[in-house]
Image 1 (cartoon, helix red, strand yellow):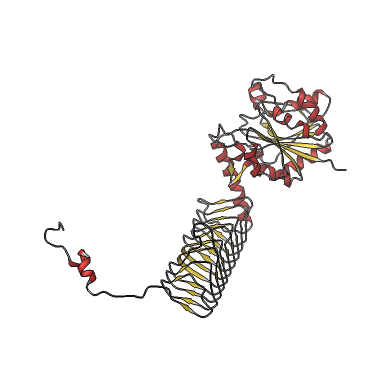
Image 2 (cartoon, rainbow, N blue to C red; image 1 turned 60 degrees about the vertical axis):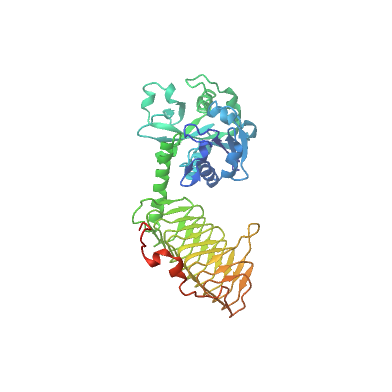
Length: 466
């Protein structure tokens, strides 16, 4: 029978070395908190019970993880062993327990799975995940036995000159027997150069008790990388960015130049889509095949169909159909839904608005809280005045409606199928299907008024300083 699996994520570090007011694990890699990356790796490795060890402000961490995560507090930061000790009462003696760092976003679920398989196969009390680095400076060294087991992990400050030559380092991730971990935690001492309780000392405790300590060597050395500074965080972003770009290139996405391109790890892109410089794709964004995105566009949690063009525009929490063009310099705010064969031109803003197929909104228009049908045309400068200072109201536009330039729509109002509004009209009443709405002051010309009232029309006059 497969043993129950738990994970403890160490996330109590503050942001002092990051020069941040927020906990360190909330610093972002490719637009997502490092803590989110680590939790997701645990979930993908099949670990469903997760304990987060937080610092002084656990409420700041909760939005970054699933609601099912349980939290404990490490009120004093006295080392990794002390952090896991804070979660001891939640550890199941009959479970296998993974302990991972919340600032290690490059931890791979496949490495966690493979390490767990070795942990079970070798019946280890503790199995650490390690990596081989060309420059191991700053990392705890793994001291191996002749049979491949582990004798100890020696922190750099406590290592001898010969031990510092070892290139195999501790990644900071482990698998433990739950029973062993619960028994070992109270035995940790702070007799070291840092005066802290090292979780790495559990290896020596296991060996001293006649139990086996093992190790799994991660194929990629970046599994050991964490972030204690903004420079290291930048390094993690660079590695993660490279991995994501390579994945999309292998899947047939065209990225002719990578300048300024950031693509989040959850983004999906179809083949033959071209991503141009300056484009940022975040969250649960999905883009179909044959599109051109960019340059200088940002899409977040947005779905785009096939064969679309998004030029220098910003789309958030929206959907776009097939064969649609947007931009340049337009914005789709949350709740916007655009159909097929739609044209949205420059300086257009949609907010919580739906556009039917074949509709055109060419330029300089704001549509808020609107439902628009198919084959409609909006002239330049149309505005939906959807907010009266207290409440927001919805505008409904039928099919084949022509909205003239500089029309103001004051909802709640409905424009029936096939209706027209004259340029410069303010519409504050429903327009019946097929009707023309004209709501403007009748033009009156006053001969000679400009010559009498506008000085520059007459040219420079003596003594007026011109």
